[in-house]
Amino acid sequence: MNKILVLGLGKFGHRLITELASREGVRIFAVDKNEKARQAAAKYVHDCFGANLDHPESLGRILEKTGPIDTAVLGMGGSMSATTLTALHLRQRGVGRIFIKAEDEQHAEVLRAIDRGMEGPNAFRITIPEIDQAAQIAGRVATDLVKQEVPLGDNWGLAELACPNRLCEKTLGELEVRQRYQLTIIGWRESEDSPLQHATADTTLPVGCEITAVGEKKDIARFVAEFGS
Image 1: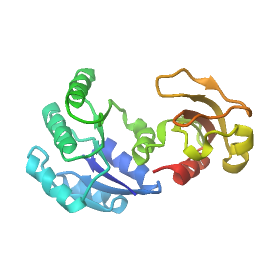
Image 2: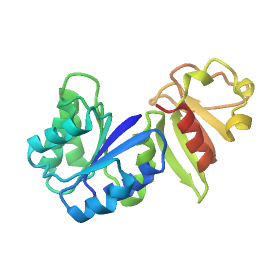
Image 3: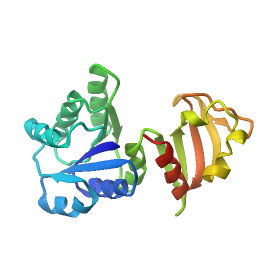
Image 4: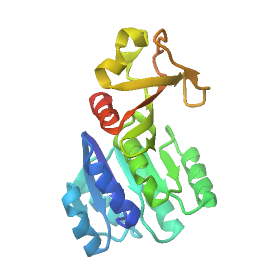
């Protein structure tokens, strides 16, 4: 179960929790100081907290109630300094993945510098999103399996995914991915920074690679639910 904390229930945050609520394997907590925003979010989340995040002790009290959080999403408005300090406090409290809605590229660079300067693996996932990007970000938040999702019309989509180990070291023809999951793997790469390569029935996927799959959104969601963390 991926425990997700969404901080800020403006247009972006509210859209995000509605997208997340339709996905399996997640438990959602939300924070906003606006009571009406919390009431509107209540049916989508496990619990909702009112707090002024300008005060670090408020965040500490929330985390005592939620227990360990796997993923946090900062969609709150306000000053860049408040967002930056909240991200820093979350990282110090052991949250391993922190998605941050940066105000602009300069703000994003500051956040990257902070993340690189701290001990351990990088935790910040920084975006400068528009509202209609929330569905794509929801897929990445819900599971480590999803690297990116691109809608292709109303019912179809393209997804870049971490390849599940169960699909590695056999040919795609042997795996019968299309027959079993109604998805077509059209490409793969050894890592995020490697070039994309064409996939055929004779392709054997190496452990740790990423795949690019096309199919109906419901079939992508089913695949992610089966293999995602």
